[in-house]
Amino acid sequence: MIMTQAAEINVNGTSVKVTNLEKLFYPKTGFTKGDVIDYYIRISPYLLPHLRDRPITLKRYPDGVEGFFFYEKECPRGRPPSVKTVSVAKAQGGEVNYCVIHDLAGLVWAANLADLELHAFLHKAPAIHRPTVVAFDLDPGPPADLVACCKVALQLKAAFDALGLESFAKTSGSKGLQVYVPINTPVTYDQTKRFARSMAELIERESPGLVVAKMRKDLRKGKILIDWSQNDPHKTTVNVYSLRAKDHPYVSTPLRWHEVSFAAEKHKASLLRFEAKAVLHRVADHGDLFAQVLATKQKLPAANGLNL
Image 1 (cartoon, helix red, strand yellow):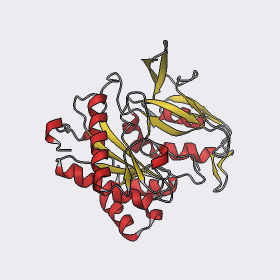
Image 2: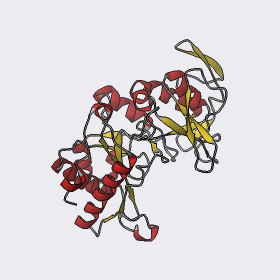
Image 3: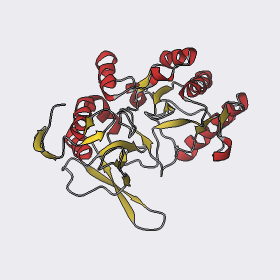
Image 4: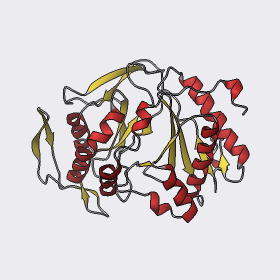
């Protein structure tokens, strides 16, 4: 940890106030608010490119992971000048001004607000109706677990490979996995959601004893829900490299596909659980394993070419 007291720190010429740095945010591991801020500072070269231009919802834990939390859509006042906002109309009238974090000062400011988790939209401003990726959230219904998620993720990858699409996996930092198919070409949420649902239903037909594509909770026991509904202009997904509010400071971590295969083969979920310190070592060794999600340009297959 680089800080132990309240302070004004200079972040690339911007003064950002940080407070209560010794407060325990993850009591079971001794991970403090100062450690949270320190992690976000150290991971920022890899995290910030994935946040850039994306409106986010803050998920704040003022008393740490064992206390209450709240979601904050309206960007708080007192933000650094570099934190911009994007206005989005609400269905019931009015609008929400979401935060858009571009730089380290904004990231430190958010972390100081106890925003442990960064939940970003799948689009970038100002093109708020154009997603850049298709996201598949693999959510295990007990007793199904992370190992079962690996098996389903590999089925999805095989289906994408057959369509000539590159795909990338990351842990959710919680109990499941997420698979991203980068697009980065003009597309609508209607198109990505329809594609995601079709792919989820395909895998469900291939493995009905393991996979469910319907949103009904009573169908999830012992199965992996492939949640295609995340592909929506009103929904956010935990950002890569974000901390999660669990008993340990787990992180939503990019994976290599051979790691997913190995964990499935060995039936060891622990191989895919990474805390903040381990993630910092991973990026030092391997760089940003999710960088291609930002760069890869692909087009969704035509509906009549899916054969779903």
